[in-house]
Length: 282
Ligand code: PLP
Image 1 (cartoon, rainbow, N blue to C red):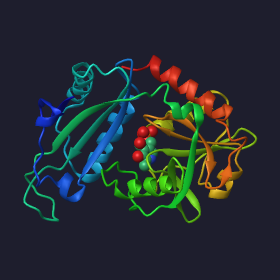
Image 2 (cartoon, rainbow, N blue to C red; image 1 turned 60 degrees about the vertical axis):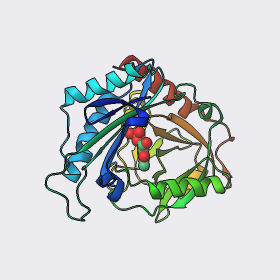
Image 3 (cartoon, rainbow, N blue to C red; image 1 turned 135 degrees about the vertical axis):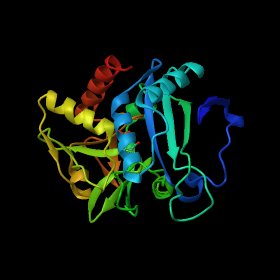
């Protein structure tokens, strides 16, 4: 692959970052993941806006203008002949002598790379996912998309160890979100329930689009926390994320959701999301 590093296009084996980079030493970095389908960027402006918010919350300056950032996204797709997959972007505060206090003079490190993978016809979208619930032991600024991903990674490993596909994180009996996705349920009357925005969870770009589409389709949407028990008794459950779109959950711990098959409402929202976001992809 050809990757982008601080203004240079390099073969992946030649892209090197300092051992003093604060992304490496302190997880002092933020990231974004944007899906690519047919060589086009899905929901790009949402991801670009969240990127700016994450940077401003941490006081890191964006190394490129908005136009240049979009150009780099387009360029990396072309240089890698990426038809379907994702673009990973990371900005760290940069390198300086190790110190807890932020350095004044560090230049941010900007990295982009691509990963080719099926998004539209991801096999998981046909079968649905099984979920294990795991305590949410992350910090309390989950609204910032930082690269502090050790705990979500451990939670996913714990879920896999328990025979599930992924983890949903639980705080005070309520689900905050998945290890790398937003969690949603559908009640028997067809109401979509999803946790409201706060510092307790990442403000999912796909979540925002799905809520708009659900409301546009005449569905009632309740933005409030839901418990593990409410999720287990729901008619449907699903996750959303840039690379999963909407993907059904068919089991939570030992409890089968609905009839154990991907549900019709999650399927409809997935279709609506795919159609509308493909049409507006740039
Ligand atoms: N929640 C967490 C913790 C995530 O890591 C992600 C991103 O992958 C999401 C939610 C979904 O966000 P988005 O829809 O913007 O990809």
